[in-house]
Every structure is written in structure tokens, then in C-alpha cells.
Amino acid sequence: MAMKLRRISYAMGAEVTGIDITKPLSDEDFAAVRKALVEHCILLFRGMPLTRPQYVTFGTRFGPVRMDQPGNLPEHPEIKALIAKPQKAGPLLSNFNGSDWHSDMSYTPTPIIITMLRAMQLPEVGGDTQFANLHLAYDTLSPGMKKMLDGIEAVHMEQETELDHSSPEKLEASRKAKTTAHRLIATHPETGRKLLFIGDKVRLLAGMTLEESEPLLNYLRMHTQRPQFVYRHVWQKDDIVVWDQRSTNHNAVGDYDRRNELRHMDKITLRGTAPTGRPYEDPTGARNRTETFVYHFQ
Image (cartoon, rainbow, N blue to C red; front, side, top):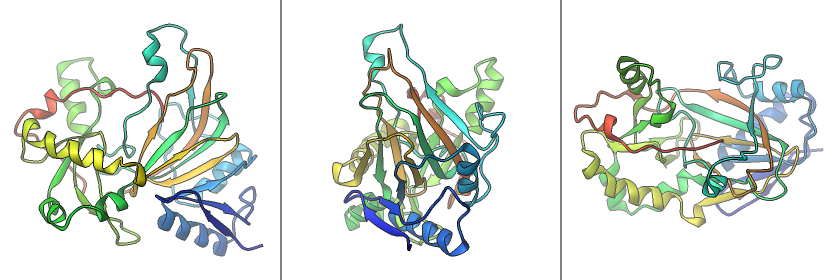
């Protein structure tokens, strides 16, 4: 049976049927999957009851997976178990927090290029994941805006809560290690298609102050998150979603009963090279004055 694709939204994404990913894929089948991924940005394999070894076999077909993530499973170091446990204490508002819009590890010169999540345990309702198509975000900018943004670098920074605060020296070192400049208008290395490489980890534009950067960045963030560019995935158990981080931002929605319910995803990631990522030296000191973004799970 040949592989079939069914579009799952206007913005992006396709459900894959007709191939059995519980078994090693032939070179022909995998080439078709890889082509579909870069074309559709997101692939959905609905209700796949894989064992963890089978999941690893599927994930490693895309390339070397990241083995150094904190929390990786000792018996399967290719997998990170993302478990959002019930939070009995704290204000009610924290029950509904989700993540920021981001591409994983965009604050490094070698961010994540492909991620896959498998739904292991889900809340009764909610806990969805949203994706924004960065190609559509670029395509729909005006010619004048495209021309103005071409060549500008955006500075991606990790949130302050994730840095090493054990000493002033280690804090500054971790800030430098997790601050990277990428071209705002990037080119996908496999398709040649342009995209708007932005997200909530972009805190300023290179060579500008926070005050100068923020109005334009606010507009671009809101533009990228327009409903017509977004796909919201409603998880079912054993769903596997694979997405191209170079083409998308994502955002985990915390709209479920986090005081009483658990959400568990098994995650596999592949790290790669961004088009123009480079460490960023900050002449304005703005890196040390950025606001803090807090997210709870991915």
C-alpha cells in the first residue's frame, strides 16, 4: 500500500497513512516521508502503538538524535520524557499557563531542526499544541517590509530562569552561551524557501536597543501568530507528530486541569545548523535587561 497524505489544516500539516512505522522503513518510503515533512512542515501519524525501541528506530532515520538532554531516559537516551505532573499548590492562574511561541534552542548557533512527540498520557481535555507557519508569515509581508527586514539579525535569548545563577560570572557566561543572532529573513536549507525566523525568544534586533526593537518585533510576532497561519493539534493517545523546527514556531497550551491531571509526551529531537547563526556580542547591555519569559512544558 502506497503512502497517502491528508491535509489537516489550511496553514500546514498532513496526516500520513499507508506505511507501517512500527517496522523499519525502506529507503523509498523514508524518502517520501522526508519529502512530505519539508513540504507540509508537520506530519501526523495517528494512533501509533509503538514500543520505545520502535519509536527510536523511526526517529533515528531522520539523522543523529540529541542524546544530551537533561531528563533523557537511561534505558533509551534518545528519548526525553516530558511529564507535566499535577500541581496541587500555587495560584489558580498557573493552572492555565502554557509555553511561549518558539523554535527549540533558537538561542544557540545549532538549534533543533526536527522534533517528534508521541502522546503517552493525556488530560481528559486540553493540553493541545499550536504551530505557526513561518513561511506563510514571510510570504504575506508587504514587499516594503521584506526589503526592510532583509539582512537584519534577530537576537535570540534563553529566559533568565533557565540560566546559571550560582555566581555573577557563571550567569554572564550562560547568558553569552545562550544568546545567538540569526537572520530575521532566513532560507530553508532543503527547500530554498524563505521564512520569518522569529519567536518569543527574539528579544531585540542586532545593533538596536530594546526600545527601538520592540515595536517592530511586537508586530512581527503578532503577524506570525495570525489564525490563518496556525494549526492547533488536539492530541489523541499514541499520536506521533513530527515537525520541522526551521519552518515553524510552536506553543504548548496549558488549558487543562493541571492541579489534578498529568500530561506525558515522549520527545525525540535532532539538532542541526541554522542558516546564519552566530554568537552575539551585546554592545548595548540590553541582553542583561530583557524581560523574563516562563514556560512549563513543550
